[in-house]
Structure formats: C-alpha cells, structure tokens
Amino acid sequence: MDSSVLDREDIQRLRALIPTEEELCLIKEAKAQNPHSHLAQAELCLLTLGEISHLSSRLQLWAFALDYDSLEKEIAEPLFHLKLAMEQLAASQTFRCILATVLAIGNFLNGCKARGFELSYLGKLSQVRDTHSRQPLLHHVCVLLLQLYPQSSDLYSDISAVTKAGKCDYSLVQSSLSQLEALCKASWEQLKVLDKAEEKRKGGKGEKRSGGGGGDEALAPEGPLRHQLPKILKECEERLKVLKAVHRRVINRFHSFLLFLGYSRAMVRDTKAEDFCKTISNFSLEYRTTRQGILLQRERERQKSGAESPGPNTPVGRRKRQQTLTQESERSEEQCKLEEVLKTPDSTLKLDATLPRSRRRPVLLETEVVTPPPMSFRKPFTH
Image (cartoon, rainbow, N blue to C red; front, side, top):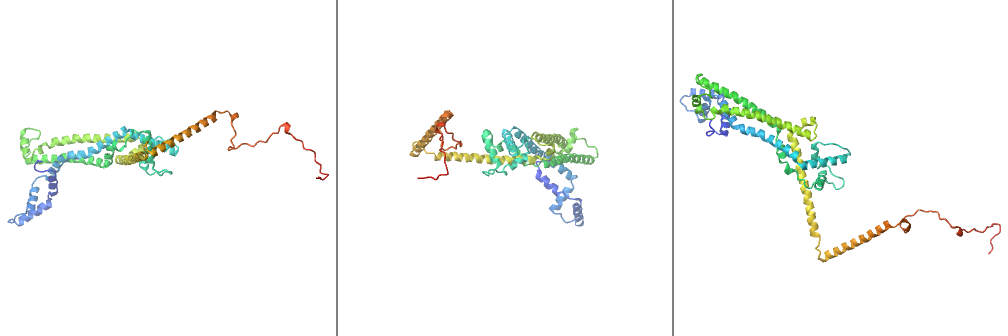
C-alpha cells in the first residue's frame, strides 16, 4: 500500500481486474493440460493477482483511506453553502425590504391584512401584469424599492451562497453520508479479516501492531500505509461523527429558518433545501435583471433630455427662456387674480354671465304697480 507506486486510478483498475475463482480454475486447467506451453501476459497477470490473499479487501481499504477526504468534502461543502446561505438571507436588508414591499402590495390588491406569504410566490411576480402599461408586478416592486430604499442592492450579489446551495441535492447528501458510514464500518471489518489472515500466516505468534518494533518490522514490506490503517480508520470514524452532527444541526437550523420566515410546520417538513434556495436564487436573478433595466432606461432618458436641451446662449435657448418667462408671468397674474377674488367679500362680487344662476320670481315695488282700467265686452271697439 504505497501511494508512490500505485495511485487512485491504478487501484480502481486493479479492482476491476480481480479474477474470479472460475477464471483461475480455467487458467490452471489449461496450464495442466499443456505444461510445456507458456501463458500469455494476461493469464500470468491474473494468476499473480489470484495469489495475493484477500486482494479485494486490501484494495477497498486502500481506496477508502485515499478517498475519505474527497468523500467528506462532497458532504461538507453543500452543508457549508446552506449554512452560509441562511446567514446571508438573514443579514440582507434588501431581502427584508422586498418581502415587506411585496406583502404590502399583496395586502392592498387583495384587500386583506396578511402577516406573511409563501416565498414561492416570488417566482410569480413576473407573470402578473397591470392593465394599464402591461408591466409585470416585479417591475413595480423594483420601482418602489428604488424610490423608498435607494440604498438597496440588486440582491443577487448579496446571496451568492444561495445560488451555490440551489445547485446541490441535499437528499443525495443524506445518502452519501449513509454510504460513507457504511464504508467506514466495512473498512473495520476488512481490517479485522487482514489481521486474522496475518496472524494465521505467522502461526498465531504475531505481535499486535501497537506493540514492540518486531511487529512493525514484519509489516514493513507491505508499505507504510498498512500499519497505519488502524490509526487512519480511527481518525475517519471520529471525523464521521462530527460530520453527522454538523449535518443534523444544519438541517435543524434550516427548519428553524423556515419557521422564522413564517412557514408552518407542515410546510417545513415538505420543503426541500435545494428547492427553497433555487426559488430565491431565480427570483434574485430576475430582480437584478429588472432593476438593471430600469436604471438603464432612466440613464438613457437622462442622457436624451440632456442632449436635446439647447444651450442658454443659442437662439433656440433664448426663445425657450423667453417663453418660460412669459408663462411664469401669466401664471403669476392668474395667481394674483385668484387671490384677489378669494379675498373679496361676497357682496361686492360681480355676476359672472358664464355661471348658472337660480331663477327667482321678480318682486315689483309699490310705485310701479299699475291698475288696468275695467274692460267691457258688450260694446264693440271703435276706431
């Protein structure tokens, strides 16, 4: 078991080339039938591998000792990304402002006073459009955020760990942890088999590996890794216990984080970590794209208005300034008239012919009352 002689790929090839008992029997029978013929290189290689006792157990132990770090990393990295993702979301003020704005808009549109909402609805903001400008609801959320919270960020750059956690499969992490635990137990069993075989080969007089130097000298031909396997497996077992505790605590913290966001306990049990992180990551990417589009449009309008506005010393600029002064003077005169009308008492107000007036019956004075003479219809009128 010397890594300077065989690397990880060579070990994998040897595990694939281990001959079965049937193959060894066929080679030996062919050799017995033709004792004068020489075997080919392939048959000689298989016979040599078959002569090594417990070769499969030795190679599996060797592969486990070399692969443990990478197997542990495959489990620890997704857990680290999930832990960091929860910390970034909890510390992001932009995420809090977005949730508050979306909740306020939802309560206004629905006419209710809900205390929270399911975060999967964030992915539907780009699908809901208003009836006037046909802009998505996410566009209006970005506009409100830029007006109310100008110091807010694009959210996507603040939660990079959420994007990484969304690409992990945490159900696969659980199964990998179980497989690693099974490999560790199997390695201990294989080591016991090798120890028994070695004691049997020495006639039961072999000393323990942890004893004097005689045992180390006897095991030295097998390479430096062979007599270090008990120590390596013991260290792997301790690290595996720590890894299991880390996995349990991170998953429990994720469930507590969902409860903090307002999820019910039933929803917490059904929510997968990768689905949650993928939803937040996709929304943050859409939010950043929409926000950048709004800022770019505003910058274009600002540049366009600055390019179209003429200079103050040009004829167009002087004419425009004169028109502006005239409009301001007219507005000031109208303002003065309006103030004068508001200050004038009602008795001195003049009647405006353009306004409707209530019809009242006229009252005649006593000096203007005329009594008509009596009329008789018996005599005809004469000229």
